[in-house]
Amino acid sequence: MKNETFDFYDKTNLKSYNLDERMRYQLNMLDTLDVFTRKHCENVASITCRLCEYLHCNKGFTEYCTICAYLHDLGKLYIPSSILQKPGKLTDEEYEIMKTHTTLGYEMCMKDLKLRPYAVGAWYHHEALNGTGYPRGLTKKDIPYEAQIIAVADEFDAIVSKRQYKTHIGISDTLKILIENSQPKKDQMRKDLDKSLALSEMKELAKMGKINPAIVRVLFKVVADDIAYEISFRQSYVDDLKAEIERLSKVEQYEKKMNKTSNLNKKNYFLEGMKMYLNSNETVDNYRQLYEETKEAYTNRKAEIDNLYNELKIIKKLRV
Image (tube, rainbow, N blue to C red; front, top):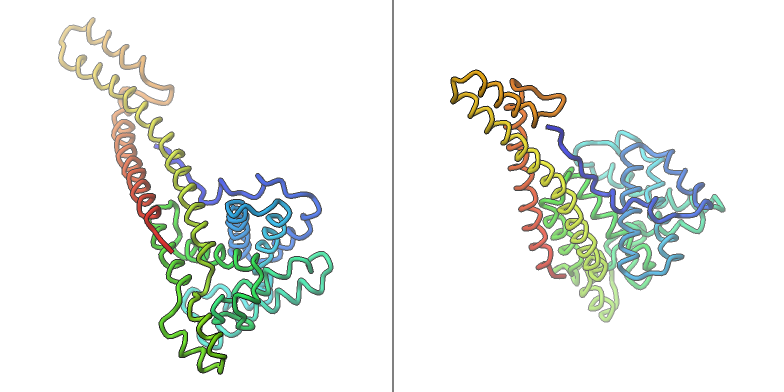
């Protein structure tokens, strides 16, 4: 039985937003990146675009922010593949090299007049509202709003990609990580004290997490709507499976009647009844395997839909 496929980002594909031709140059820069990084940049741009829409940003800002998101990891072009594609945890030295992709991406954008307007994504996407980010350790007041949006999209997709989700089942665990990162840390005041900050600034930073909680709340809505879309997508497939089961059950009924009678004419009659419900690639000898596979697929896919509904309930109860 052929399985349906669900693309996590299909509904948010940027082609649907009709970005104009002047942006082709910027987007073509992605072709210089490795496949994994390019896919990540595309995903982050898709999520960023959705977040902007849910945040009711105007079209111009949404397009600008989306391009910034597309280019946010451009600096990874200059990170050694041994570090960029390392499967295990990076060493401290390797991590310091990896962190330079923000500065490298910014410098690359600033040297190109066509890329310069979008340098914000590369420069700021790893800065944290509470000052614990890099490359400059900026705080909320100095981090552009578009970078705060991209940071949420970037962190979400990084976790999703690492965990290799093929469906939204279990995605609430990812959102819980973002909730944690949007909340202040207990030891923040002590770290700020080490920086010799003013007491008023320390108190202000102590109230902040790494990422913007208001944007995380909007991400919940994006994910919830996408789960509803996935349920709809899968339900259509389940309905098709159910129709197939009903068709093949009629074949089975005719077969049972045929096996119960010893009358040759009746046997032929029931045999013709079986053939009437068989498709061109099916026979009276092989239909049963297809029937069992279809019933198994129906059970599994129905369970997936139930799990998605449960996931949706969990997400709707999440609070930032």
